[in-house]
Length: 262
Image 1 (spheres, helix red, strand yellow):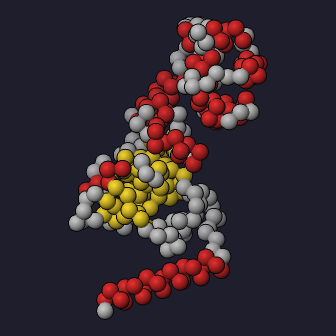
Image 2 (spheres, helix red, strand yellow):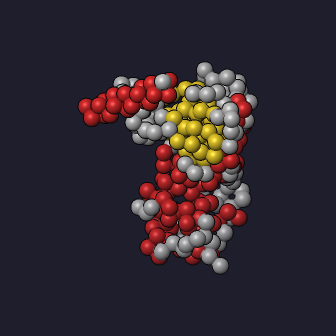
Image 3 (tube, one colour):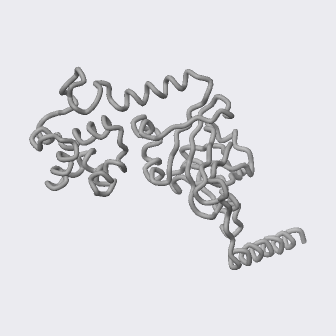
């Protein structure tokens, strides 16, 4: 039996590396690190040798010994006896005992895996966290957004959202991070339909993007936007074609409204 996958995950967490950081160290794709740790694939020989050279362990120990059971007194060569996750949870617990709310940060590179891991404590424990002194007590999460669909909020902004546990709490036209099985993680204005509770409408601030609907049963999380964080000096850039498209879109909407009124 090979312990390669289990040992790779154990060592990575003892070193307090993310999968992305481990992949960079080994010069391989992050997805390969995940596949090795989940034992969906066996590391190639050159990858095994690179891991052993990086961590100064023998290939035999890496493949055939369960390193997590060695050195319970902290002499295993990979750090203190308490695991990385235990230390992270202790740190978060200490922070939670203070008056400041803890905000887990979901960067763009983690958004793809968020839909599968949003309810997995181990996935959430690997997310970086921060605090904001202006936040009232509550359940918060921060998401990095990309694209121009929510201009003038620029691409690369971080949206700090407060958890919404009930769809009835949604306020029309307010902005939310919507996590759904159909669309993944998106930042939109939400319009609820009083006549039908089965769908909600998602609206972009950029009128070049058409509104669309999603089934409420596909929505797994909602986070009401409370703060937007972006780099100093960052501002949306509009070119002439974009501005012309916005004007045309607004004219079409006005024409449509006039027809309905008539």
